[in-house]
Amino acid sequence: MKKILLVFAIFGTLACNNAEKQSKVEGATPEAASEEKDTAPNFGIVIHGGAGTILKENMSDSLEQQYRAKLEEAIRTGHEILANGGTAVEAVQRTINVMEDSPLFNAGKGAVFTNEGTNELDASIMDGSNLNAGAVAGVTTIKNPINLAYEVMVNSEHVMLAGKGAERFAKEQGIEIVDPQYFYTENRYRSLQRIREQEKTQLDHDDQKTAFLDPYIKDSKFGTVGCAALDKHGNLAAGTSTGGMTNKRYNRIGDAPIIGAGTYANNKTVAVSSTGWGEFFIRGMVAYDISALMEYGGLSLEDAAREVIQEKVPALGGDGGIIAIDHNGNVAMEFNTAGMYRAKMNRDGDLEIGIYGE
Ligand code: ASP
Picture 1 (cartoon, rainbow, N blue to C red):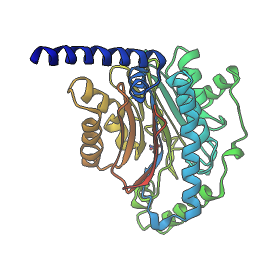
Picture 2 (tube, protein in one colour; picture 1 turned 180 degrees about the vertical axis):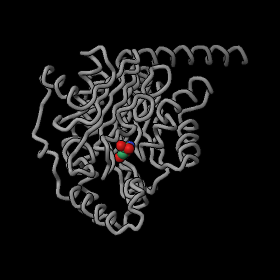
Picture 3 (cartoon, rainbow, N blue to C red; picture 1 turned 30 degrees about the vertical axis):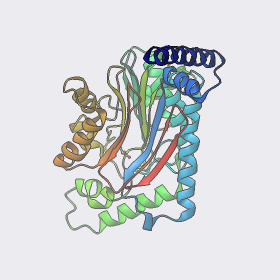
């Protein structure tokens, strides 16, 4: 009897195996489909549209809808590039272009105003496959600063160009130039006026730093944009674009164009883009620090991001957040402010959009 059972068992197993092989060939069963997905190359994308005091009670339903729709449009742009086998660098650039062109964010159209009433834009991009990087700072006529950062990365022997020189280089590269008026938006101009008025009423006129670094600004949302992506070829890239901080003076440059602070990407570890109070992100070398904690400290992305954003940056006195994706497709969207405009999308097309600290 035992023998008979054994024969049945062996026969049954063989029959099952054959059936399994058969179905794999035809790709007919759900099991086969999911197995195929597991061996397909992973990819993913994550974005931010700035961190700060973004509270539900200060947001109208219609404005929230506009933010959600723009975040979705931006991330779907990059996701489609990745799904079609495009590079992480291209996905990052095109995704950021969508947000630069929207007045909702503090980058490109809608950039904040300097103390002099002008708009000075910073941006950077990094390719994790070869650690190549490009950045521009203080440009005033470049419609999409991330595109100029890309040109610096691939068509110059430099990493960072600033001001007039960067704009001359832009002309040589055929990058779209606009009249500075293009960047004007009434909302951002009103923010500058409000801060100027506040400045006038301050008793301590000697302390020039006050109006820039003070709670008023600290409590306003920042609005920089950034993107990090992993492509099907296993390459990571990150980019960041911003108008900086309202009422900035003296050609102040923030963290966004600084490789290692605002942007960092390394195939070995992670791609990161930062947003927040730039001075502290420079001093904390935030984006690189997350990568270093992973590379040398063996931390997971989740732990590294938490350590830097919840411990290190606040200990210095700063605030803000990051978005990041690691070489395995794990994503972090960490912030220590009330909110951060953000979205992520994985290989399967699952989309998650967030604004407040939920
Ligand atoms: N980090 C940017 C800066 O300091 C501001 C922002 O994130 O919105 O220039």
